[in-house]
Length: 240
Image 1 (spheres, rainbow, N blue to C red):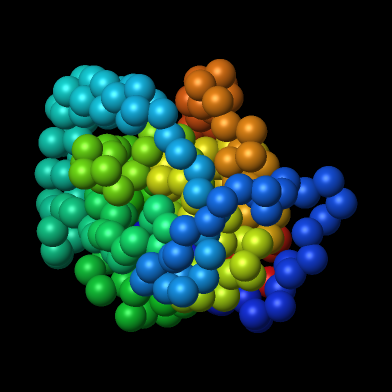
Image 2 (cartoon, helix red, strand yellow):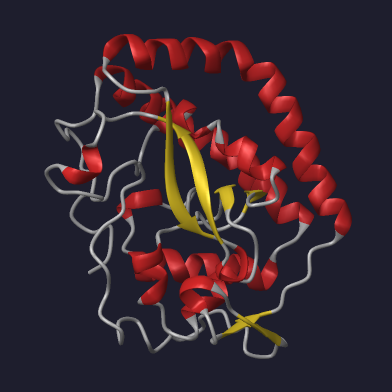
C-alpha cells in the first residue's frame, strides 16, 4: 500500500503557483472513469519509448526474479494471506486498473486503523514488509503493470479514485501520460511532499519530458532508494 491520505477539498490548489507548468496549449481528449466527461491533455508518446519501457521491464524482471521469489516466500511465512497485494488505481486518461505489489501489511489492513493512510511505524506493517518498503522491493511487481500497458517506467505515481475525483481541471493533466514506477516527484521527496506539490512536480515533468529526463530520473531513483527517504507522509505529506 502506498501512503494515500484523505481527499482534498474540490478547490484545493485550484490556482497554480507562479511559473507552474501549463498544459493548456495541448489538444484534449475526454476522460473516463473518475475523470469521465472532463478534458485530459493529449500527450502523445513515441512508440520507441514504449519499447524502451518493455525492454527495461523485461530485463529487471529476469534479473530480480530470485529476489522476488524469496521476498514472496518471506511474506507468506511471516503473516497470513497471499504474497501479492492488488489495489485499484487510476491511470492514463482516467482508465482504472489494479496495481500489483508485494504485500507489506497484515491481511485486511485497509479496513483497520488509519485505513489507506500509512505512517512510519504503522503497526499494520509487518517486519518483512518494512524491509520491502525500505528497499522498494515491494514495487517490483509493478513491472507486470508495465507489460500490460497500464504503467510506464517513468511517470506520475498512480493514485486512487477518491483523489482523482478531487482534482481540479488543471490537475487532471497528471493523467495525460501513463503512471510510472518512478517519477520526478518520487526523487523529489516522495510521500513526504504534500499532494499539491507532487502534482505540480508531475505536471512540470509532463510538460518537459524527454528521454534524457527519464534516464536522469531512473539514475536518481537508485540513489533515492538507497537513501530510503520520503517513504511516509510525515508532517507535510498527503492531502492537506
